[in-house]
Structure formats: C-alpha cells, structure tokens
Image 1 (tube, chains in turn cyan, yellow, red, purple):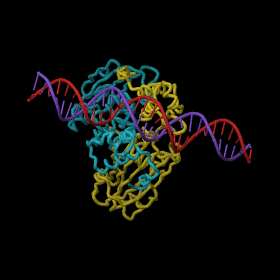
Image 2 (cartoon, protein in one colour):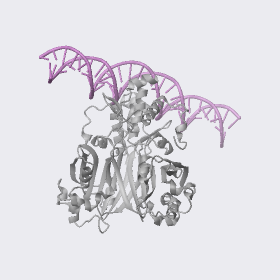
Image 3 (spheres, chains in turn red, yellow, cyan, blue):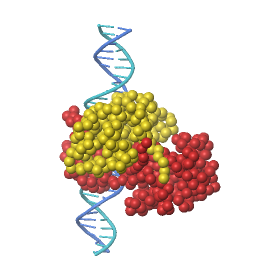
Image 4 (cartoon, chains in turn yellow, orange, cyan, blue):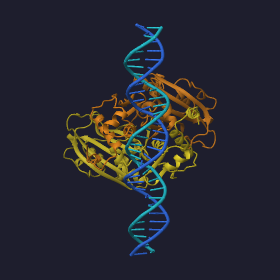
Length: 261
Length: 261
DNA sequence: CCCTTCAACTGGCTTGAGCCACTGGTGGCT
DNA sequence: AGCCACCAGTGGCTCAAGCCAGTTGAAGGG
C-alpha cells in the first residue's frame, strides 16, 4: 500500500483466519462492502473458504477487534458506520460559554442538535485515588474529597463518565454537595469560593475499557476509551478541581487549540 | 465496588469463559497476581475449572483484550506491567525548546533518559487524503503535498508514526525534501519560508490500530492507538503544516496545559 | 385484518481433539 | 568447562460437532 509496510509480505503462509480477515478487510476498504452492509454469515464464510465455522468466526473476531465490523446476535455481522465525532473543544472550559447558562456538555450537545441528559450517579465523601490526591494536593489516606460521579448522554446514548473531585474542606455544606448545583454549575459555586479558573491541565491517555465502563457506555468490543485527567487551576495557581473523564472513543474526539510560545 | 455498578449482578449465569476471566481479574486487582507474574497455563486453568482448554483460552483472550495480560508463545501468559507514559506536552511546539537545537521528540526522550532514534521512512510528492487537504487548504485531487513519513523510537522501541504534510508549491526544491532538514528541523525551514508558528490545533481521537500500525509499533493485542491530527497556523492564521501522529497508547500520553478565557 | 406461532437462520459459547512453533532447562557429549 | 541435542511445557491455531439465544418472516388462526 505504501512505504513497503508489510503489505508486500503475505506469502509467509498466513493462518486461514487471518487470510479471511484480510480479504474481508480489503472488500470493506475497496467499498465493495459499505457501512451498514451485512457480511456473509459465519457458516457461509466457512463454506466459501473451506474452513471450520470457528475459523471464519475467528476472522470476524479479528475484524471486530479492529473496530471494522460489529456482530449482532441473531441478525448478522455488519460493517460499522464511521461515527461522526462528538467533539469536546478546549474552549469547553471558557467562561464566555458560561453566559449561556448552559454547562459545557449541554452546549456541545446543542451545537450538534442532540438532546443532553446528565445523570448524577453519586455524591460522596471519599478518600481519593492517588493520582487525584496528587493533583488536587490533598492527602490520599483520609476522606479528603467530595466525589461527584455523573453519566452523560446524548440522545439517550451514553457518551462519557465523569468523576469530579473537590476538596472536602471547602465544599462541605455547600451547594456542591447537592445534585443541583445552581447557576453555571459547579464552576459557578467554585467562583463564589474564590476560585476563578485561570489555567487547565489535561492529561490524555487511551486504553481499553474495564468491563464496568463497557457496560455503562454500552461499548461494543474493539472500542477503546479516551481518558482525560483534568485539573483546574485558579488565579493563584492553586488546583481546586480534578476530574476524570472517560469518553467512548468511537464517538468522541478532543480538540485543543492553543497559542504557541 | 462502587455506586451499584453492575458488579453486584453476576448471578445471571455468566458463561464459564467470562467467569474464569473475572476470577483472574480479581486476583490481579487484589494483588495476588502482580505485574510480571505468570498466570497458570491454559491447560492448568482448564483443569482447575473443569472446562476445555479452549474455554480457558477464551478467558485469557478476554483479559488480553482489556490490556491486563500478555501472552508469549512458548513461555506463558503474564500480567502486564503498568507502563510509565512517554508524555508529549503541548509545549512540544514551543520555539523556546528550539534553542536547544533538539527536535521536540529528542527533547522529550532526553528528559526521560532514553535514546531517541528517528527513521525517515519516505519523502514523496502525493495527493493528500481528504482530511489533510481540508486542513492544509490544498486540493485533494492532485499531487499538492509533500508527504514525509517518520517512525520514532525510544530506546529502540517504536513509539509513534508521524506523517507530515506540507504544501508542495512552497517546499519544492527546498531542504524540506531532504531527509536532513537542517537546524531546528522542518520548523526552522518553514520559518525561513515566512511561516512562524503562532497557533496549533490538535484533534485527538483513539481507535484500534490497523494491522500495519500494529506491526510497525509492535503492538500487543488489546492496545489502542492515540491519533493526533495536528495543524500549525502561522502569524496570519494560515495553515502551513499538517501532521498525523499515531501513538501507541500503552506508552504514550498527551499533556495540554493552557490558559482559560 | 391483525395477531400469534413457529421454523429457519443468525451469532454466542463450549467441547475435546490434534498439530504446530517457540521456549527453557536437562543432561549428555566433547 | 563448554557446547549442543533433546524434550517437556507453553501458547497459536484449527477442526467438527453441538446446544443455546436472539431475530425475522412466513404460515396459520382468530
């Protein structure tokens, strides 16, 4: 295909399952199989290639692992639709967006013509995980944080899991302990506590989901998650909020636009 | 575990393969199996749980899919080491780093005490993919770009694949067509062409690797890639360089630190 | 006409068997 | 002491068969 990547070395006797997978992959990329199309059934493939059903099945598993196809029990295997991304821009923290009275997520949903729903899963006093404690600058061996966990939906499809951590000593007894945090959400309340968001640090990584995450996000096999560990710094450079975002990667992208130098 | 996630609902008769996977997963998370430890062999697991070897094997596949374990032929299955991340900060574009004479990648490698190697895979005139053409503001139906493909290694382990696209009309005949681009790399040459990098746009997504990418990056099953579509804008807001970074997600993280408002 | 039933087809998962390739250690030979 | 051949153990992959569960549409009954 390009640059002598191993495309030119199939002769070394690929296992049958890989061969079938490659052929199907070629059909998809050549457009002979379009998104939404149904692949031949496992039994049909097995017969076509003269293999056992398990081998054809293995080929399909390989494709699913690459995120190219999706199997639906009782219906068939389908070429996956390229997902338009639900995009989270770095301006999602900007306070100018706050004038709309919408939280960043609702704003983004509105932009894309989708309906937003946010479930408050839990609000608890907790001892923070180590990575959170380091960033929020609180001890990790006592119940030093308030943990709010939310699930976000767009058109009733789960999009992200967000765990927000705040200092217990300053949130205790405030509206931040309530599901409804009032105008402009938690950042509104945090401003009243003297924290104006001035800088943010986003640490981004990708990994495969845990089974729990896969269940909540309704993730199909072969879909990774994007994890963002977000830290908000106030006018004095003090971290006052840390959140862990877990996005489904098949429907989510991140956009950072920033000045250089 | 927390918040009534589905951890409390295993009774609905999990298939044996899942049950075995969950038990092994629990052992790993409880620390009874530490990173680097060898799991029981497939045959041993099968006997222990009274299943066929294939079923034990399937359980291990599930764990591998979650990135928890890695199988090595002839040796065994091992709990995966938590990888320290090779981190790319948003300051990697900053020109102040250019004074060291090191490219951003070499700088980061140095920071982490690793040796950097960069292979120039190809330098070609090409017709750009659509997403690149849009961002670089060139036609996608003619050979309008110079494409440089590099592979990056840290301590001889592959870390990222980078495809850089530049306007053919302005790079033609310059040092940008050579493997060695001279002091401060391509950005040095591009400044001489009148493009001072002023803003960057990074579009981030995650997905499973293609087989080609998996081969180049030596990716184990269950490891996704981070894809960054990077656009450099000059002092006039003109895009003059677009790059596609493909990082292995098990060793790479991204860090963005930026002002708000 | 609508609804129910049912059969055929789909993927999900397991079994038990076998052969292969790779690894690491044992033990024998030089 | 050093080398090397061998072998037991490991995962990689396949086969052929079977049962289960979800889906669909056609046939039949009301």
